[in-house]
Length: 106
Image (cartoon, rainbow, N blue to C red):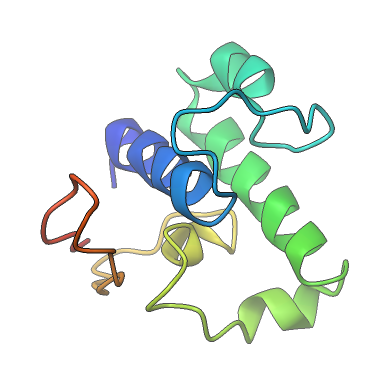
């Protein structure tokens, strides 16, 4: 996985699941807030750690819930949820046909 893939997944997540659609994020406490991502976007391990923290928050702070997460078809961050690279992972994310992203496959 590349930094570009990770950053694209973060952008898709924010635009679809957080319903931003280009709006400015006002949740400054979010690990994926643009001000935080801008500071770490050149460091893949820090990006993965930020996603892991976001997933932990989403799962109520329960690490087991993150690993058991079954949102592979709806969450763009799913393959990165463990905070580390997973080689050879492939999944499909359901994208709204009105979105400009086509055939999202990792």
